[in-house]
Image 1 (cartoon, rainbow, N blue to C red):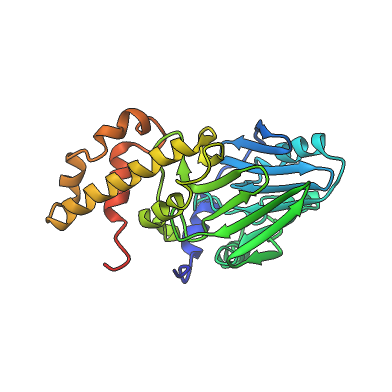
Image 2 (cartoon, one colour):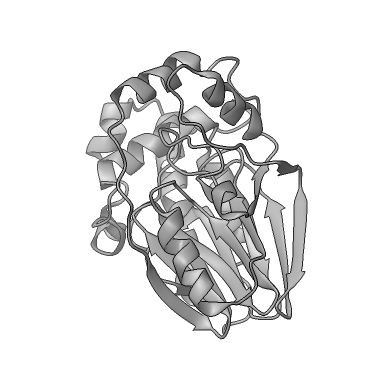
Length: 288
């Protein structure tokens, strides 16, 4: 996938219209000792915290960083911080999300760096540091007795989707590929694809029953719940593709309500059923 040649007009419009962002609180769920799920309005992040410092992985914004750092400081005396910034809403572009000011080392996928560099050059962009480290396919963190592998995935929510596997704890953060509070979003401005989302989730449906999965949005899930989510994605995609192949228009596909059997479980989140169907309709197979 290619990053767009120029995001300047889009990002400039955001800078001119974006209001000042107030600091936001964070909800904390310690799912196993030393492994935290940090929930803010931007979504769920996951962290390992202990005597060696902290690794934080997930969607971050300057508004959420101070509250997360305050929580980490309450749980470890070490000042060491590594923060891997996962892709969020394409309208939220904020350098290192303010982590450099706390002495943290910020990391992004290499496909995200050019977007951040272009944003930083725009007139009016906040004076925020850019992440100094990028990775390509895998980056590993070994501290606090935990072995954490962050692995770049096929484009699902976006083209820099990644999973974070906490091997000793049996915890996996699936990022934008998994939302347990409703239907997921596919961000086409960041080369997202329903097929990539299904592929990423499908790699973990045979995981041990006691594994836990952290979504981008919603509560932590079990393997069985992840399997149900994967089944939903596959069935909706296949239904939409069959209708499209038979010549149905977008309006006809939406009107047929291909998510109807799943709406009671998945239709109450921030992505309405019809909006999700439209995303699936426009997410064409790679061969098309």
